[in-house]
Image 1 (cartoon, rainbow, N blue to C red):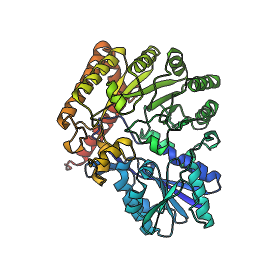
Image 2 (tube, rainbow, N blue to C red; image 1 turned 90 degrees about the vertical axis):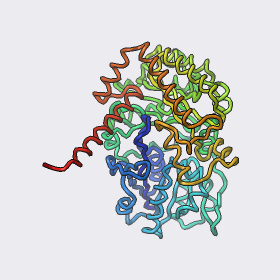
Image 3 (spheres, one colour; image 1 turned 60 degrees about the vertical axis):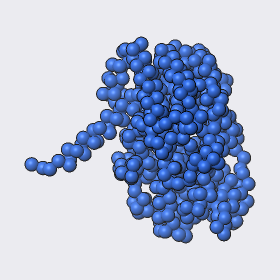
Image 4 (tube, rainbow, N blue to C red; image 1 turned 30 degrees about the horizontal axis):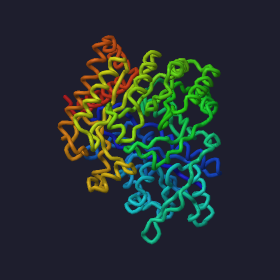
Length: 512
């Protein structure tokens, strides 16, 4: 069967105080590899890589990539099925428009969708867009079975892990169990992705430190944080690849693609101490000079001791993100974030001693948050600054569909499933919180905004006061476009946006 996969354009918040960037479609590359191994002919229409410098204003935000009409013009006329992914629900209005236009252009072609958004809101999506089938959760095996049934013209009712409409009502087939033999899955089909363009335009997750290819070493997360969609998307089953297989993949990209930088996109990469030690030893055995690898999405801190931190640094591991979310033990208990302050501080001490770049992720404005909880966070960020971590990232809380907190807020009537609501998470890193986007019961948007700057000033003020040389290092690296910490990534992006804005102003001046 001839299948065309589509990586849609993405929404951007150009005003966000964050170093987050769109990145290569790792999930689609995995799906493409599995479909191709099953005998299908697979192509990828990547709306981001096709127009990496096309930024178009769309209301309060912007979109990056090909506009919907140009996507239509680039559809493969011979495609027998089209499949599209969407991770973030805030992109749904744009993705919905694309789906509607594709179905109008190619009404005879099955339209299949998958990813976090569709898994979290299958019925909502099916009833708002002309989707034929939604793949729920982990998609590798489900996609292979679904397209086999479509190719053979057989009913899909026996394909586990999908949803579709029948007579206007959603049908959900039996839930598919998680894939456990993930070492048997083919590596991502990166030959279908324009990696050079993603690297040229700095569209990479984490720090951009040379030719970058993302890696996925584990799947799932064993924890049940109430603000996270992972328990419902992946379940709490945590599956690791063999360390040797991950090292083999890195070595392959090192030699065949010239890759030197490998951000791990795992939900929670370091859970088992034996695994991370074995993986580091595999890298040492291969002797790959000049590589860096990172955990930009955050990981657990409990197994980071002096030996592990030293192994990370010796093998090119440079950047870690810990996600305590709050300095309040009470808050962590309420959001089911099973992380103790003592464990976090121990991991930080070992990491700083071994010259690892550390970021702490924090969230403020949970429904229960009160000033006392933020005072606990203030104490934590001051302590982390004095201990020597490099960065903190502070976001406002927004409910994400298919999370425990989302369902709680939905039940009490604080959430209405509209386009405006789905957009709210894209404003999590704004310079200020708007009253309409405040889900905290005890503090106003203005109070939370002031707390954000208070925490940032506490952290960076103490960080630079106790280590004044960092000011010059950050400035020098920013001017050179070098990224060694999240603050530099943010400033490099800010510099680039400013130059684009200035060029736009100059071109708008009348000649003469």
